[in-house]
Length: 129
Image (cartoon, rainbow, N blue to C red):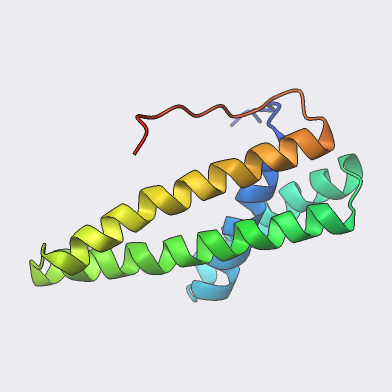
């Protein structure tokens, strides 16, 4: 299969790396970990070779990872609600939390892109709440 090389924003790259790090912590299947480790290595190498790190960028990365860790937990909890056929208050709260956290995540990614001068920026626009 051919390699697809595409330019992404630095915020998107850091977001993807943070998710892969969470997968490395959470997933135990050796076959899956092989692919996750490979992808993480490729993306981390690109980051290290192309992005100058600093304290602020590291802080923003940690914030992204914390949000993505919370999202992972929420998705697990939502799946448990689905399994239990429980679509009451808990499910509604979890579902609402997803979009609030995703809004925070988008803001952090934009801050990363502005900080690093990324020419690609993920732009979001939703109905205000």
